[in-house]
Length: 204
Ligand SMILES: [Zn+2]
Image 1 (tube, rainbow, N blue to C red):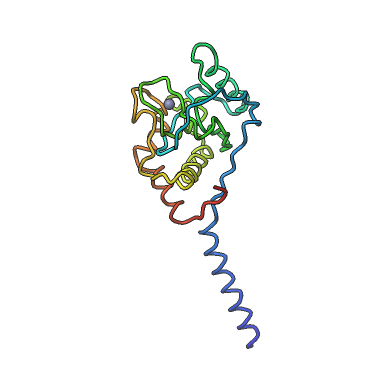
Image 2: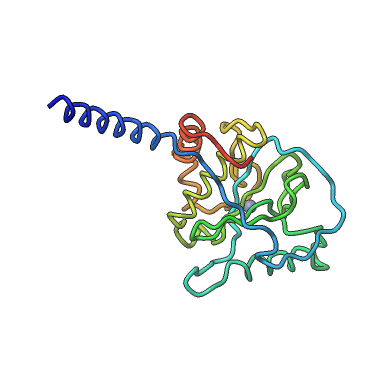
């Protein structure tokens, strides 16, 4: 009898420990390197330190069942570095596919680019593939965005309260009404804060 009580207690303790460690599951954000989308090398660039984060949509309707994210990202780079814009690289620091895959964009210490009137110096630019005036945000895409935001806040010592979207700075629909709703109702910033409070952030 005594032995079975001991076994029962041990199992009970194990369950408790497992339960606790579950809520402290580390956040380990995986970022696919530029090679994955066959990036062209950047031209010489102006540096900055990211102090705030701005979220965008890429702005083109994207069908994840029919299109390749890597090919699309490559096209965005080719367009941006072309003679009309002549940017040094793809405009964003990170891009997120519908399936939650995060791709490395330009060097995070490079000032991003914009077609609108705000100054992106000091802004970390995160863009989600798609046009969220026309389509819904992918569920995995939203989770990846929130995790990347938490990861970036920790990595660059940025307050989650400074996370904004493009339309908060400039006259634009970006990041589209179907993405913006998660910012205007506080969902995104709340979930970022929750992660930072409850989970250790790894790999930074
Ligand atoms: Zn934008």
